[in-house]
Each structure stands twice: as C-alpha cells, then as structure tokens.
Length: 165
Picture: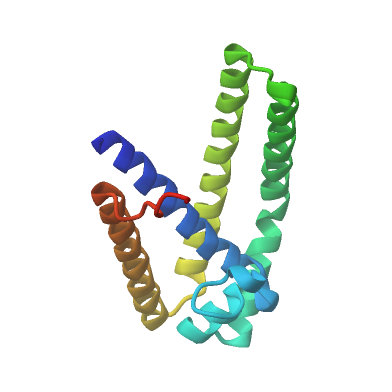
C-alpha cells in the first residue's frame, strides 16, 4: 500500500511539475483550458508571478534553446506509444514485448523529466526575482498539499465514485 501511494504521489508530482514547466514554456497562449486557476498556463503564472515582458522573453529564449531536445524525446514517446498500441491491437498480449516497450517509454519519460527540470531550473535561477521565487514556492506548496489531499482520499477510499446503477 505504501509503495502504491509513493508511486501515485510521484506520478502526480511529475504531472503537476510538468504542467508548470509547460505553462512556462508556452508563452502567453499557455495551455488553454488545462491551466490551473482559470485561464491559460502562462497567463496564470504571469498573473501569479507578475512576470514582466522582458522576463517572458527570457523564458521564450530558454525554451527555444531546449526545444530540439524536448521535441526529439516527445517524438520518441509518441512513436513508442504507437508501437504499444500496435502490439496490443485486437487483444494481443505479448508480455515480453509490452515490457520492452514499457521500459523504452520509462526511459523516454525520464529524459523528458530531466529536460523539463533543466528548463525549470534555468527559469527559476535566471529569470525569477527573489519575490517571484518565493511566490513560486508558495504555489509549489499548494500543489503538494493538493496531492497529499488526493492521496489521503485514495487511502480512505473516498475518491472512488459511487457504483453505477
């Protein structure tokens, strides 16, 4: 049970941190309806962190510098997902093949996480002011609290929808 909670917590933390990084990355158009707190991801962070236009330009420059690496990994992940779908078409099940594809996908996800965290580090250390860094940490704490609340609901079974009638 503890292992399951740890895995879920890790996955959710990656999702939230990935969302934050993507919001940084996508500029004023942000993530559309996926941004938290209403509005696009970058617009949300722009409001919350009060990013200036020069800071937004710095973020764009950092993202452009890392774009090729991220694009390559994203393409690898998409190709791997397509291979997994093909390998399991019509109910096919080859555990060795699926495990191999899962391992490849995990390696690609690890690369993506490293790329995202590199970009996030660059933005945090090169773009944000100390006040903005403090606000970013406050937002991070809110996300951690949200994850912990979700994990608590999972542990108590209160996250399960009622059975269909």
